[in-house]
Image (cartoon, rainbow, N blue to C red; front, top):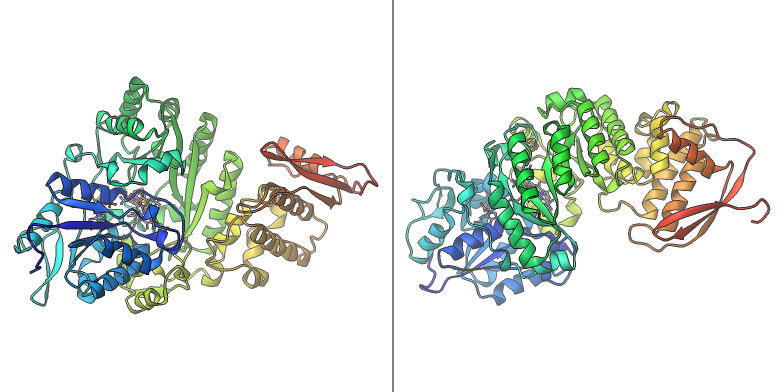
Length: 599
Ligand code: B12
Ligand code: SF4
C-alpha cells in the first residue's frame, strides 16, 4: 500500500498537455475541473496545474520542475491518446525525483488501456477508469489512510507485485445531481474570453446512442445518452456570464441534439432566460430539422460541429454512421440561411475504403464548401486514428501499421523517448498507428489532407475544379506521380501558408500542363487565388499590394462564375490579356484592372 503522511494531502492535477510542445492552443481541462471539484467537496486540497499559463515550450523539464515546486503527495494526470506517451515520460521523470509521490492516471486513454498501462509502466501507481466523480475521493481516502483499494470500483493498480483490476465503475446516472465544476480552480479561465477570445465549455451531458465503428465513445460512454435539464445548464451559463463575462459558450456534449424534444425545450428555456450569449454544440446532421434549426438560431446558436466522416454513401453504411448525404447538404444549406456556421469533419483511411469512396469524400467536401460558402477552416479532413474501445479496433487492432505520424498526432511532435515507447507498444499507443488500407495506397493517403485543406483555402481554384468535370479532379492528382513527389505527407501543421498554397498550385499546374491543358483558365485562376492570398497575408504573414498579368479579364470571369453560384464555368474572352492590381482595403482584398500599357 501507499505511504503518504497523514493528514497532509496535496493533490496536483495535470491536464492533457499538448501545450508543452510550444503549441499555444489554450484549452480548459473540463474533466479535471470535475475531478478537482469532487475532491474539494470532500475536503481535499486539489490543485490543477494551469498549463495555459506556463511559458510556451516549457517542455517536459519545465513541467517537471513546476510539479515538484508544488510539493505534491499525489499527482493525477489526465490523458487522451495523443498525450499518453508524454504523460508516461513525465510521470517517470517525476518518480525519479520523488519516488514517494503517488501517481494516478485518468481520462479516456488510460481508461481504455488500464491493465497494459499499469503492467508495463511502474511509474504509474493507479489508473482510475471512466467517470470518477463518485469514486475519486474514496481513492484518495484509501491512500491517505493506508486502506486497501480493492473495494473501490474502476481501479487498476499493483498490489504486492500483482496487477489488480476492480469491477468497472458504473457511469454517473444522476448527471443532473453532479455538482457544477468549480471554474475558479483554473486561473487562466478569466483570460479565455477577455483575452484569448475563446468560448468556454459547459458540460451539458454525456454519451451518444449511435455506434459508429471508429468511435471510442461506444465503450467509454456505453451509448448512454444523458442530458442535464435546461434549468441546470442555464444556471451554469448564468454563473459563467456573471463571473467571466463570456459572450460565447460551448454546450459540450458528445451529441447535444439527440433528443429533438429536449433540444426544443432547451431553446425555449434559453429564450425565456433572455441570456445574451452565442453558443455552439456538436450534433449529427440528421437530427437537425428546419424547425429545430430555426429555434436554435433564434436563441443564439452560431456554430454546430457536424461529424460527417465520409462523402460516400457506401462508406456511411459500412462505418455505421448512416447519414443521408443529400440530407446533410440540405441541413447545411438551411444552417447557412439561418446564419449558423458549421464545422464539418471528415475522415479518410478506413480499412474498407476504396478510391471511389475517397473521390466522393473530396467532392462532397468541395460541394459543402460551395453551398455553405463556409470558411475553409471549418472543413476538416483527418486520417483515421485507431482508437481503443471502437468496433474497428476490435476488428483490426492486431494488424496496425506504424505511421510516420498521422494527421493530427504527428510523431514528429513527440520526443525520441516517446517515439520509442510508441514503437514498442503498438497495443497501447494505437492512435499513433494506422489500420491497413488494402484498397488505398498509404503514400497517397497521407498526402491528401495537406493537399485538400490547402486547396479549400484557394476558393476559386477549388470551385473551378469542382465545376469543370473535364479537369477530372481529384482523380487527376491521385493518379499522377507528381502528387507523390511534391506533396508532403502528414503535414497537418503546415496548412494555410503561402508556401503551401504555392506548392499545391505547382502540383496542379504541372499535372494539367502534362495533360495538354496548358491553356485552361485554371492557370490564371490559381494565379489569382495566390495573389489574393499573398495580399491578404498568409495565416501568419505579411500583406502587401501586387500586380499580376493574366491572359484574360479574370475579375470579370470570376464575377460571371460567382453569378452562376459557381456551377457554370464561363468561357474566358481570349486575347483580352490584362494586368490586375490586388490591394488591401478595409478588411478585404480588392482588384482593379489596370489600363493597357501602364505596366
Ligand atoms: C471537448 C473535447 C475536445 C476538445 C478539448 C480537449 C481538452 N483538452 O480538454 C478539443 C477539440 C481540443 C479536443 C481535441 C482532441 N480530442 Co477530443 N474530445 C472532447 C470531448 C468531446 C469532450 C471531453 C470532455 O471535456 N468531456 C467532459 C469531461 C467531464 O469528461 P472527461 O474529460 O472524460 O473527464 C472525466 C473522466 O475521463 C475522468 N478523468 C479525466 N481526466 C482524469 C484525470 C484523473 C487523474 C482522474 C482520476 C480522472 C480523470 O474524470 C472526468 C469526470 O468523470 C471528448 C468526448 C468525450 N465524451 O470524452 C473527445 C475525446 C476526449 N477526444 C478525443 C480525441 C481523439 C481528441 C484528439 C486527439 C483528436 C485529434 N486527432 O486531434 C484531440 C487532442 C487534443 C488535445 N491534446 O487536447 C477522443 C479521445 C480518445 C482517446 N482514446 O483518448 C474523445 C474521447 C472523442 C472520441 N470520439 O473518441 N477534444
Ligand atoms: S461518432 Fe458521433 S454519432 Fe458516432 S457514436 Fe461517436 S459521438 Fe456518436
